[in-house]
Amino acid sequence: MKTYHKNNERLVTKVFQDVFDKYDLMNDLMSLGIHRIWKKNFIHWLNPQKNTTLIDAASGTGDIAKLYLNKINDKGCVYCVDENKGMLDLNKRKFKGNTSVKRFCNSAEKLPFKNNHFDYYTISFGIRNVSNLNNALKEAYRVLKPGGRFLCLEFSKVKNKILNRFYKTYSKSIPQIGKFIVGKSEPYEYLINSIEKFHSQEKFIKQIKKQNFINVSYRNLSGGIVAIHSAWKI
Ligand SMILES: C[S@@+](CC[C@H](N)C(=O)[O-])C[C@H]1O[C@@H](n2cnc3c(N)ncnc32)[C@H](O)[C@@H]1O
Image 1: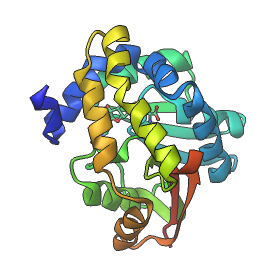
Image 2: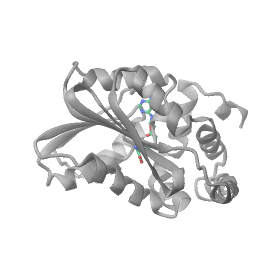
Image 3: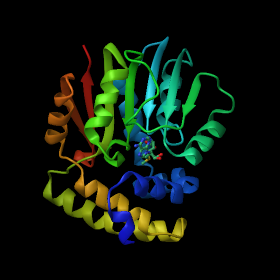
């Protein structure tokens, strides 16, 4: 278990290699299905327009890509980027040959795209896994067009003490759920640990601003269990 708790690129890769085939099922179980509502809220706030191009970093199996394409009736294009090939294979299966989705097995910290290319950049439950947050944000800024929008969905900090106590107690059961479903508790120990370590809403705003984004703001969902951060490139 010790190895999962050191935060470096290789270990994050290993965590997702260990869980990718049960990833969607575990997401539903751990969040009691609520991650679907969070993601719908996320796309609602993005409010994408037709004939636009989205990059979804740390895309996993493609939940955000799917919601985006539904919202614009498939009149646009989404580039799913994930460093885990297994996740991208599941992603491909989900979209059954839909040519509006392109997939790239790359790190969010070194994107294989030219500057000023995308209308939107999204990252959902991915930013806390990157090994260098500033590099990932720098890359997000670089590939967005001027006028482009950054939107990030991530676990955050709960301010209400009662909710926080309940949430912390519930979180402790997640590795046991992982053990039961996936046969391993360690990746889920890592998950809980990485959530604990990630920035507060306000500190994350500061990090985003450092990379020249403007109009940086956030919205809490479920009392701050997760937050959506929004920012623009000019
Ligand atoms: C918790 S999953 C989130 C998947 C999806 N975005 C969602 O909301 O369901 C995190 C994903 O980030 C990917 N990932 C982790 N570090 C990455 C990095 N540096 N670059 C690209 N993808 C990364 C993992 O492979 C995994 O698929």
